[in-house]
Image (cartoon, rainbow, N blue to C red; front, side, top):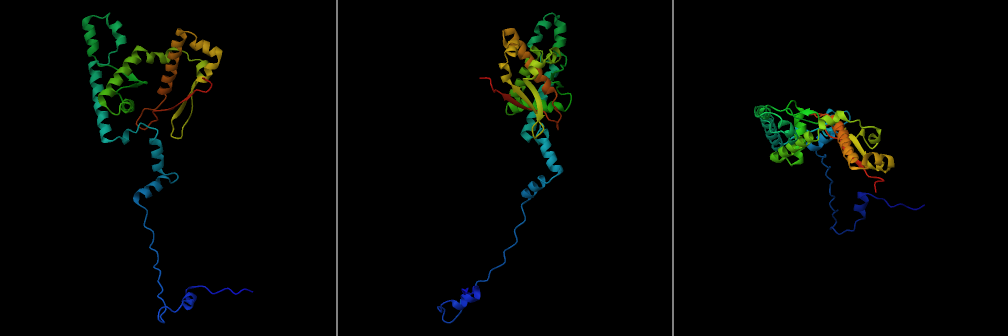
Length: 261
């Protein structure tokens, strides 16, 4: 049976060569390890946000799908207030008059024209009347974000949008045309993403169907009607969103080009 040599600190000292003038080498005492420091406050907050059924987590997840009007910086909030003032002035002074209304106004007398231009206007975008309730903030924020919070450029973009919507009669278009099943299988909303945004699918490969193609894109009149129907579908989808401060006011747009080439 093999003999196993002893181990340990005592045996190491006894077996050490005598190079210390008869004195045993000093044994270094190990100090106990200090307890780990408490986690920083930021880490503690992160842990709390991940706890199940945490109210904080629920609030954060809900806000990710909203307009986040409560999370604006001071600069962004200032820009929103300035844009609201410009919109109010434009509504009060009739500055949102559209070119599409020129033909109708030509039939009015000069006094009637002056009254119409000076009377306060009622303007809506996506079914939301501007400056009538808190949903206006979400609408205006979309224009501000598109222009990097440049107030003047955002206001110009807003005016152009209002003018185009009137010229194209978008509000009237919503209730005028029957979409039909042929386009509903190509453009539709189904399900939500993990943050609550509705998902909108555009499957243009459906146009490979010869009958659908002939009914929608065969000639210029059909192509124009196709554009109007697509705008109608988009407008109906947008109007189902919630533009309130805590609502879901955007959707995910998926463009599927499979079989298009």
